[in-house]
Image 1 (cartoon, helix red, strand yellow):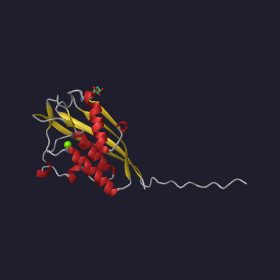
Image 2 (cartoon, helix red, strand yellow):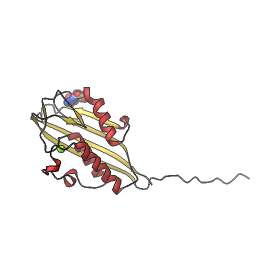
Image 3 (tube, helix red, strand yellow):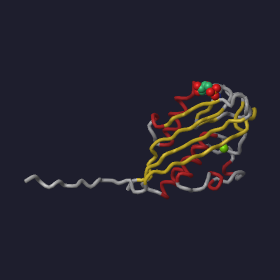
Length: 174
Ligand code: C5P
Ligand code: MG
């Protein structure tokens, strides 16, 4: 007689399923400001984001995407604009805090991948892609191959803006 099959109990299970998040951000471009994208500066950019913080639209979009996956509001709730303590703030700290908020809400949450689009007419961002991907992947705790980064121009429709859109996918494990 054949031995009875032993049913394997998985060591971990995907209790909370998957969570997708989405975020956007836009800033007006102003002379005399550094342009930051994904925690990486673009030294040849003649203008940067006019903002209370460092104006890193990509990190702001990613941060809102992270919060939205768990319905935790948006970065304006957690970092009210105009506060002295957030003036010229390094947006990496914003993303770090958003990831901490997710970890508090859903301790088994694991980021699977992220994808983002940055819309900027000039300068060309292609030469910075690897550095921006490496920078964002590190903050997100992802392998670089799990962060897809797309650049677009606005075709002259929004020459005075930098815009970013981002999606994230989490799995919730126990
Ligand atoms: O927006 P568009 O389709 O014209 O972009 C064409 C190419 O230019 C894309 O390959 C994109 O990666 C690149 N690009 C870039 N830097 C930008 C905008 C677009 O390298 N600021
Ligand atoms: Mg912003």
